[in-house]
Length: 147
Image 1 (cartoon, rainbow, N blue to C red):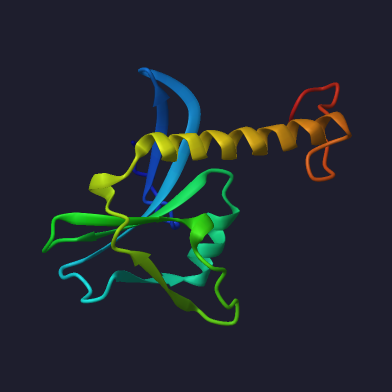
Image 2 (image 1 turned 90 degrees about the vertical axis):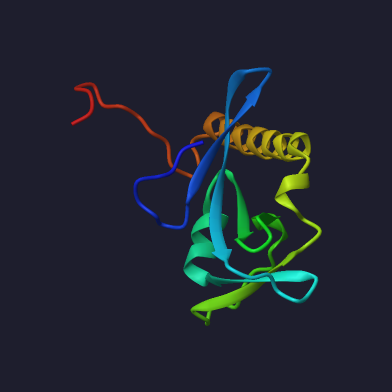
């Protein structure tokens, strides 16, 4: 686990290991916290639309985690499960189901999702390289090397 030097929405980077070996796959995490829990069955989290957009555009799987001090428990939600916010607003509220307890998370399921996501994005990138570049851009080094 690594805490980035600059906080632009990514609070932690988590490397995925299999049987003690690094896989090259990782996920990014946005952390939030509060002293007390919500009285509802969901934990509200205020999130900047810009932060959502940044994390949504990442190649890595992104997760939102909210820690509740009074409970010594955290709740989580993958960004793929967060509805897209209204782009005309500065912030919006995400509702994390309280059944998503971080202490009870199935990390094998999360690792499998990260693998599926990473493999799919790498396959798409590689197929684009074969057909002439990634998103229409092809890197071609010049004869003199990079300047």
